[in-house]
Amino acid sequence: MIVMATGYYVLRKITKHSFVLKAANHEIILTSQSYESKAAAENGIASVQENGSQEARFERKSSSAGDPYFVLKAGNGQIIGTSEMYSSEQARDNGIESVKKNSTSSVIKDETEG
Image 1 (spheres, one colour):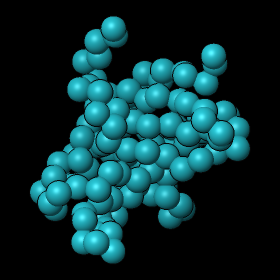
Image 2 (cartoon, rainbow, N blue to C red):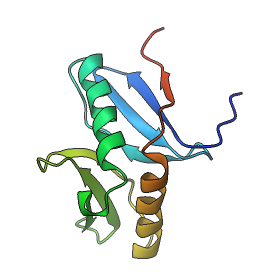
Image 3 (tube, rainbow, N blue to C red):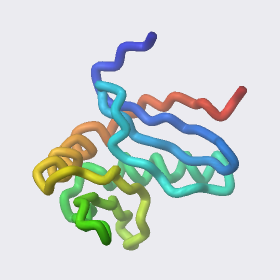
Image 4 (cartoon, helix red, strand yellow):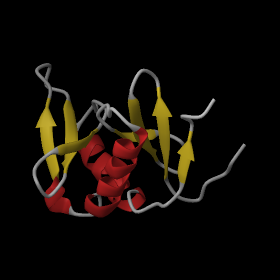
């Protein structure tokens, strides 16, 4: 088992390419959209690394059921990652802080190769 002191990205492919950002405790804190290629997903990771520490890039939202969540946007306004649904606004804000802390990680676990 790999022990990480900081967060890390997991690049994966189910039907399309995507990635998640995990905190040091291995909890998923951000999930990407689907990408057509591995290179596009890698560009998405680079965008999270660039934008994830900037407060202005986070948009706090609520689902139709009232559950708080957030999205991370690039400078052009495109969504590059979405959080899970949280139980409270405080929990959501803690999630944002975790993304800010972990987004600059350069550790990428590539699970696209079998």
